[in-house]
Length: 127
Image (cartoon, rainbow, N blue to C red; front, side, top):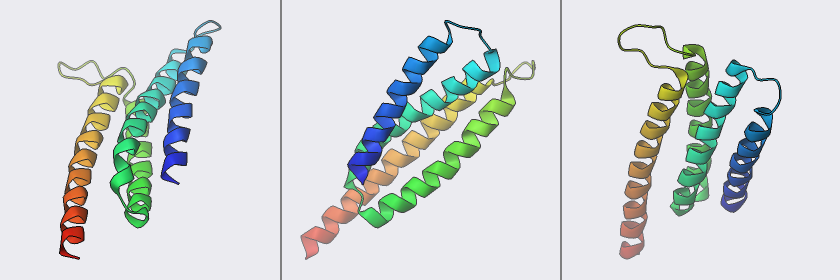
């Protein structure tokens, strides 16, 4: 299951990249291009994080995947809603929000994986 999801995320990243490059050749819609960019950033981040997620057992992996899906959907919707920013002195556009949310997600995920790795190692040493 873990390998299949990682492979799917890799194919999704490559497909979005290929689709986006061919999309820019035709009639261009800025909003659609931005949305595709948000999805691409998240698919790359998820692929990299899914490689670290192999250390989790299946139950924790399923819970982590479900939480990730909800978080990513909310982050993409927030980034899409932000659009180009609001023109204030300090404003974040959708790309900035996507990078901030993906970075925060990656940081928290890696901390979680490190904790789980040491928990699993500690429990296997006691058996």
